[in-house]
Image 1 (cartoon, one colour):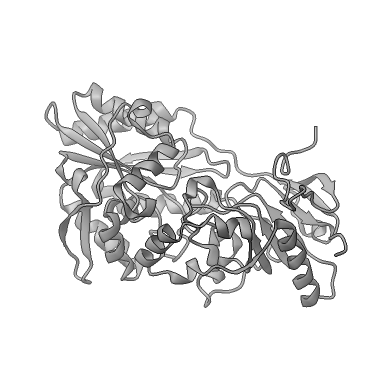
Image 2 (cartoon, one colour):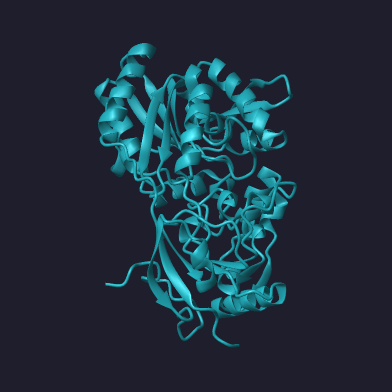
Length: 418
């Protein structure tokens, strides 16, 4: 096949706001919440840690654990990730270890279980679960990254409320919630969890486009809903996106659970790919994904958003873990493996072929590392005039580089030339 269009590496400017002293901010906030709660000396406190790679998760958990120990309390970590990690205690503990969260790094042991207790049933019929280890503690701290959800829209999306009822609800809690509309179910179920008295406080984090903490709030359980709602507006503004509404084709080097709960964030590639009733903006045409991050442990949930994938990605799928996640979320479409091609080069050439059959204009092609790291990205020459002033071209190549096995060259591909 003929070489594709000339490609240009572009850097876009993001808001770089970052919290100056995360450790001090968390320490002061925790101290205030401990004074309010007045737990007795020796009380145990569970710290719920999820599977979303909150940055910097080790520093956050270590700071909380140290503050609890200094207050004469006994902290421990529990996974708060619903059915992720294959829906097993061992798998979830392994996910935490991949993020560097273990007793040596954070100063608190990890206690993983899939057992839960039932806190009650909401007026809508949602049975609300709580991790059994967390329930046995004298208090629970919820860590939640506040961000737009990948599957619905509402005043409260991902954050403390979701972590309280889906994350800490383990597989049973996640299944219960996903059988109801999440936009209303999460706030409703979280109200029951808050009223149960098990929660000590929550740590709500908002990240900037560089995966660094821009805001951190340590709040009482009664403030979970208001905090989620207020911080979601900030998260929407800071979330990384491509500064384009339309392409004919987009290559994504890697997808993964540590990138997005949906592997590829629909907020970036187009929410209409998941919710077909929504407007097709942005529309990046033919979508090909080439690899799966090791941190995903074979869980390629969200692969159904793509039109094409490489054989190496398909071979990396752990179908048991994928089934566990998608069945729990009742999102079987997210597990549908698209047309699988033998190599990265074949994916690229097929995107070009499909795009050429779809338009008689110069091709508008893009390439990104993943849907989280979007400071630099590749676009074809015909796209340049549509880029905002916040973007600058820093390199050019024609076409992409591939190795002897026709795998796309990733090392340094998104870095400015020296």
